[in-house]
Image 1 (cartoon, one colour):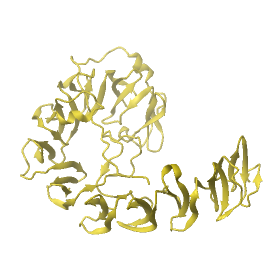
Image 2: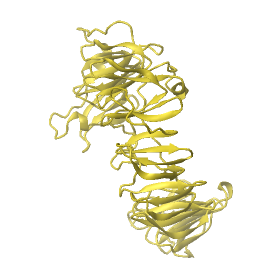
Image 3: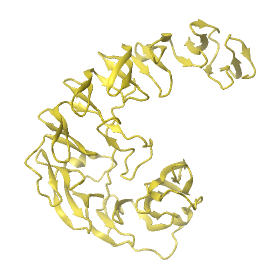
Image 4: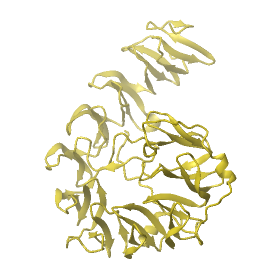
Amino acid sequence: MKYYLAGLLATVLLVGACGDDAKKSDSKDKSGEKNQPSNEVKASKYTSDDWIVVSFGLGDMGYQTPDSAVMLKGNYTFLRPFSEKHASARITGNKMGIIDEKGKEVIPFKYNYTSSVGNGLFAVKKDTKDKVGYMNLDGKYVVQPKYDMGFAFKGKRARVAVGAYQDMMDFKYMENCKYGFIDEKGNEVIEPQYDWAGDFAEGIAPVAKNGRYFFIDTEGNKVDDKTYARLSGFRGDLCWVVKGNKGGFINRKNEVVIPLEYTNHMFFFNRGSRFGVMNKESEIGETRFQTEDGLFFLAKGEHKWGIVNDKNEVLTPFEYSTLSVPEDGYMEFEKRGKSGFGSYNNGVLKEIVPAEFSYIYHYPGNDYIEVGTGDYSNRKMGMYSTDGKELIPPKYEDVENCENGIYGVKIDGKWALLKGDKQITEPLYDYVSSFDGGRTYATRGDETVYVDSNGKEHKSPR
């Protein structure tokens, strides 16, 4: 069964600093020359904020518009999305700098790390062990290098941290460092003192100190006396909070929206985000707590999942050990260690294929699902329609929908073809697949044949 229990994939802007102010060079850097754009579209209805990071091959990256027009292309090994007409880029040799919309080098490619933080500033570090500084487009430090981590500006404040472990891939440093905030002018308005801190939004930010979580305003004052054992930070207007061993959701006014009576929750990716493509927050798709139709997938007790609406009314009972994210009006589920399949409508799961299988897979858009019994090494595969009709009994090594009522089944390592429940060929083939011409594409050694609905082989697809 495929799972969609998606967690937050936010990329931390962990950066250090260099010593002296960086100076813009009047001479052209060789690395900058070879990274000038090789394909630029002059006119477009999109701005650079809309451009999408794409890879054209190893060491060959660039940007294109949502309608796939290439705007910039060069010998880049890493790119961040454009923000305020500039973007952070990495070239061969593992050095980073800042480019403009034409691919021109604005901040030289000599840093270990660079990232846009907003307000015309960039967090940079020259070497791994250096501190973070915030630099402007003139190559001057607005925030002198004294922090171990620097984050983007959100709500007119940017998180900074000291005492962080330097390895970007080891997140244990977050247990030992202290977080504070700077303002848009680079002033330290809240000194590093918190064990954890989230971003500001609408004047408040979540923080943690001495094992308790609470909210502060932009001057560092506690918003109210409410504290929590744990909280997640806001996604949209909601925040998951925990007291004791039970959690629920609050809004930005610190008011309870969903009662604190649950043990877990699910994240969802916003529709429109593209896998592997970062948004402006350097996340692989933004996440939220609610489904597209405003519902919550929550768990009670020992991971019994169900679905409630924003009034905390139960739409799907809490009796499932897993639930997948609904797609095309369907979803997969698990009960008592077995997988099943059902329809989904406005928070209501209706079981179609009962939880009797060790494996179930439905690819969005298909009108059939694959099912399997037994453990992986001895799995027997079959197929059902999405309305619950058994198409192929689960007794084969593998199955394939070849379309037009023809199915491939694997027997003793070779593929045979079925028409409905009738076998029309012997297990002769190494591979079978559907083909546009209406006949089934099949291979046998180096030979390719096309099999009609009566099991007869042909040399042509039509």
